Length: 114
Length: 114
Image (cartoon, rainbow over all chains, first blue to last red; front, side, top):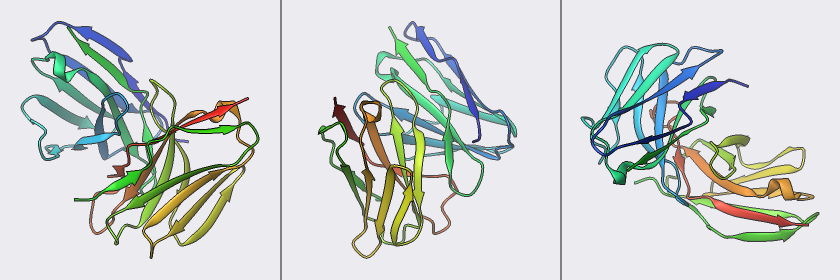
């Protein structure tokens, strides 16, 4: 199956700092990638749809100035959490679609903001 | 609002038994349905997809879809302790929605005890 690589796996940062998370499709080109957030014992909540070469589409209630998404190539999308605060602590997961609607996920990034 | 509902469980079954997981969705026009397995702290893994009414079998897993009732289920036969995980139901609404843009239920936590 398709491989989606996500880095880092976990990160601890101080409140007010910014954190960048990378998502790469290793064996296919992904014109569209998706960013999800998952709080403990909750489902995946779609944050934004990342489109190569254009602006990301954010879901209602997600602050686009806080969660910066860049999709500069067909294999790489990045999510930057700016001025992170403890309430941003969560499990962030990227995904990409290879064939039809089948979605393959990255390994996730556990963000802890102190 | 596209809702995907799952019984959060926990569902506990003995080894060798059949585990039955259920999911309902609100958008009658939804086209594709997926079951993902997620181990604690890990990203979801696709285990089944189903697109038309009826049953689809893959090894010990059987997905069942009833679009009239807006209901999809997953049966796990001969359950093993390694099947213990959270199972996420995901729905692709279609209707022009970006391919790969899925709506997830909260997941059902399954425990298989030896």
